[in-house]
Image 1 (cartoon, helix red, strand yellow):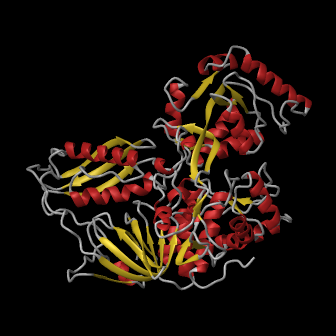
Image 2: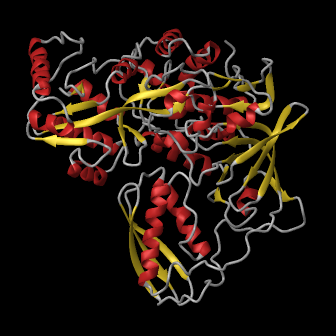
Image 3: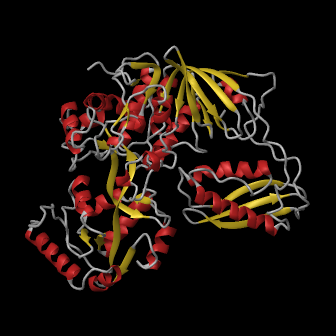
Length: 624
């Protein structure tokens, strides 16, 4: 049985009773036993369908969404998504919810799925087109329906562990706790699991892991601690970073073990980087979305109850200890869930501009829309200590999407810097940094330029584009549109031309400057030494046509948050642990200072989630 619920119609599900939890309404009204919304008994208004199956098309985030809608004379009986190219972990995950909502409402006049607005709009446009083709007026459907505004009965539940947030950290915590015998309920405010983890590349630091050791890499917790501390400008909380450095190896062993999480990581030898003294980062197939999907499947197999669209609202406290969570389902049903332990895994607050320092609000945001600081605010409301709230992860390697959001292309950029003759130039057409340097170095260089461009030859651009598409940074259809605009259609800028001079004219680089820069760089390649910035030059800029992709800074994660101890317990402002309350993932502060190193944030999500799951089931996480 699949224990993932979207609470749209029923106040309680039969699945809940099978998950090892107990639940009952506070009044005598009987809860529903169905997890699937039932269609409305009548179609409001006088609209009448011509029975049959009709198709419609709309435009989502990744391109066209085509649907097939089946109707009888009085109702919509079925909806099939025939074709779509939405991001699997966001828009793709939202489509089943949208289908259920339309069938339940018998109308396309429904709310969009939060976090998947473009997908929702495209899907609903397609459904409306199909309804119109059936002879009905889509605007008339759903009008005049009554009911749904009455007060809902509070449902009480009891379980061992409540995990608030179904991102990577929350799912890792839920799986660990369930594998150790706990009954677990997961609350997720969105209509799909994943959070920021589903948008990440998924690189995971694994110092001390069996995989790392198998390659003879002589890494150590001390080396990791110093690498991250220095990269983050010594803003890390020493205790939390030391905890991370010493537990990530064992956590990664669990992540890949067949009797652990069995996640789809690739066992290939890791290499050092500008931020990491040793090769210690492993990546999964399918990126962060692949990890989330695998974790979701695992927790479902263990009957963990994931309550979608049911945000936690308040922590329940008795005599200073956290004893549960109050939540509110999408249909307005209040929940009181009593638990022995509560794990906050709600992410950061990057999507909440009221909580952000003004210095970053002018930059495009590239994180999860669900990151609004919910867990942080719930915890501080009961006296939890929070710190480093002005630290935000600002990164280069980003394009700006048409809607103004940032989108990283990190994997593609890294491949360009390390394996091709691609270069970064300013709007004056000159190089300004060692492209193989740290994110800190590239960020500092980009901050001094109004515009920066990644310049590639034809073969390099083909590789860059394919890596970005495979990493779900953008779709082929989006890329085709941007290339057709050729730098003149707003954001993002993907310009191309047969010659460097013509490319310069498109993006506004002074005549001759880019040609001179490329000739100088190719001279360094021939000489075997980059006399300007010390890059390890291995390949020249090749033949055209040439491409310029505008690179921008973006922010996508907040680095401040709750203070924890070595057992993942949230600390209060007096320096004492709050009994019953634990935290994992981005809601925890002080892990990587003021900027992340590759693999450190996703690695923290996995490590801290596993650690929290161990802690709430009686294990000592770390004594050092």
